[in-house]
Length: 316
Length: 269
Image (cartoon, rainbow over all chains, first blue to last red; front, side):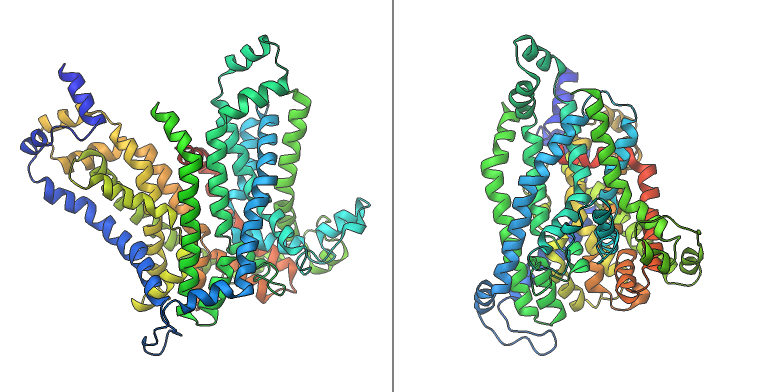
């Protein structure tokens, strides 16, 4: 009996606090020692940063003069009415939708193909994951070199007899967004594949066998048995992917600075361009708050409608 | 799925992943004339000048040290503070505990990519621009949520009998934390340390805003700047890029299990 109480005690720490406190005095002081440093750092740089941004967003301020020109919600209205910012939001949405429509099936398909006995599996895992470990800044510089006019990509296309496909990959306003998307896919697809492979490891083989015995084709087994079991992993991947798409900055900034003519501007590059490079700190803060609210709203809605099913399943 | 298809898929993944990086590394051994004549060719002859020039004269080592100082500081701070907080949040019961945990966890929704301008303005107020800790401390703060989210369940799962035994032997709760909890939590601590290190090492946006003096630049910032300054000298850019990739790749080869396992594990909860 004593053992079970002790185990219960650790699992649900909301148990006889009084007993603990009698046995171990001074817990208030200890809690302060343990929690205050982390809390201070977190409040200062995360919570105060949000607060500062909200505060500045109501001012017209270039960072040097006195902070006394209150403009109310004018910065927000200006941002939402600016066609460049509207374009930026649209580009972020395009990236998010393309990830789900193209990267997700690609990752899933490759993970399904790669699942199973494979010699050199460890090496494959290592290699597929490398672009994820290389920074976005380095990825951007690598692809800037590859995509130069008459560079490697053009040369390879011509050698393959596809010279007609050669374009100004980063200078063509209608193409630049998709070029960037390909680079993003190169960097992040390995992570997706590894994630789904890990998810597939969790699908019990007897389920596949049972489905096969019942006369299901391999495709039917995959479609009706394996993919539904992969649901939680897919939903988390979508969440990370959309949040990542909404914050896209490093790669775009280095490769195009959001250009040409704003054709690849994202919310984050717009934010840095206006708020930081042009010293419009009040306006930039308003844009930062809008960006934060969009991410926050997506997270809440997604949590409510998609992820809730997973947590419910876990509780049941 | 049949084996031949599986191997074909594996081959495609490997080729698409490695060829761009291989081009950069090999390109560093070529001259600009060679690169112009045939961008995708092999070095002929092999030239070592580009690499030697960068390893001997340029700011490469400076950027490397700056990155290392910032990443090590950010990692140390986040792991030490995160472990202390996670211990309190997992092994003590007090009013407001769940609320506090939710507060930290909610930080995940406010990543540094969204926060860069507000953090920059804050650093400006605190006169922390152009300092390495002005970048390392915010990075540590923004790594705290994931650190605590990973560490708390791990610490909560360590059996209470061990704690009671330690108490019988006269250990205080802080002593238990230091002497027993930390060693037992090592796998989880390594995972969060690796994640925090990688995030800081690869960070670009915050250093971009915080540093204007090239002497303070980190490697990602240095690579991007080098690229725009020497845009005509492709061979040097490729050599510089290859050398900048190297530390992360070496780190990755040694910590692969931790990185992949940690990321996949933390994502899957």
